[in-house]
Length: 170
Image (cartoon, rainbow, N blue to C red; front, side):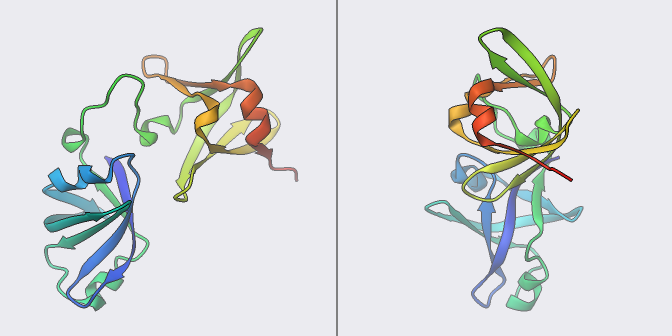
């Protein structure tokens, strides 16, 4: 399963929900026929995209009260329903469990294992288990990330990582 969005709130009184997409192209929702929420399969009866927001009508969700029960829930799809990725693209879900490496002038250094990725809209926040403890960082373009699917390694610019990383100091 691949997480593609999070329901942020009901929209209107007829069961429509507003979704924060977790994709670089919100129009990808337009080709979906169904999705899972909390393990339950829903058919998508209507999809509309407005800027970076997506609005969905789900089968069986016919009023605001039913839509309210879905607030905060994540929308997942089968991997088979996912769009094909271009070279250099990856699914965030694939990075959990991957090794994070920092590229430096001296080569590449293993930092730790990616434990989770949370999406907050402006940037995804990664949590990495390192020898020093937990580290978090905002996944920004300046990291120049490269993902090697075969070896399950995400490598980033080591200097930029130092600038955005925060360690949990107990």
